[in-house]
Image 1: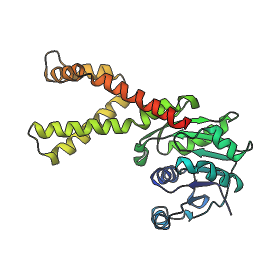
Image 2 (image 1 turned 45 degrees about the vertical axis):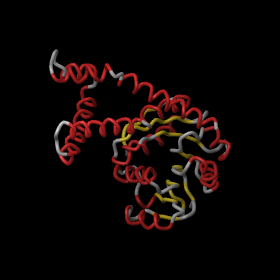
Image 3 (image 1 turned 120 degrees about the vertical axis):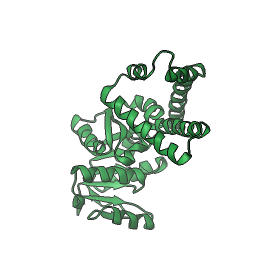
Length: 263
């Protein structure tokens, strides 16, 4: 049997992508398989995805998503090509399309994406690029896979390091802010159990407002009355260079991504 799609790697990201595909109706359960070498995880996947074939080796397929660790990408890409895949989409950081293309040969379309962890709840950001010679149809195919777990933005492959530094690492920056706000709430005298829920909703509500209206500077001005409480708080953030620190964090993560890609 030849599957329409095989997801190689049944970890969190592979499972998230498969779940998004099934939920959106982009692929039927009977047309997809998951390859996972770890037996206990295969049992978990079988219970998570009814009707999806779960196996420990790459079956015949038309296309494949490569969701394994970066050092394993060339080998599993080659296995997918040998199994008949004419398109492969890699979610591994730092492995270039040129490296994957060398493993699969010129007859396979190679695409690469950098998703982030909010994809696990269907709210991710995925940047997508293709190797030289990739067609619009190839990119459309990959975008259909990624749309199931959030926003998809097409970029040049050279920009993926910057994407890694911004949206790939970005959730950690947001979670650090959340930790700090929770600690601040406790210091101010609120019970932690209440603070955790309040901060989580603060981030959800603020993100939704930003997504719907845009203009973060305008939204900040809307809540910052001259001489008021928010102005006092924002003043401290500016004095302590929070803005510069976040810019520096993105730059450092971007540079580290470049270094990993060259190693």
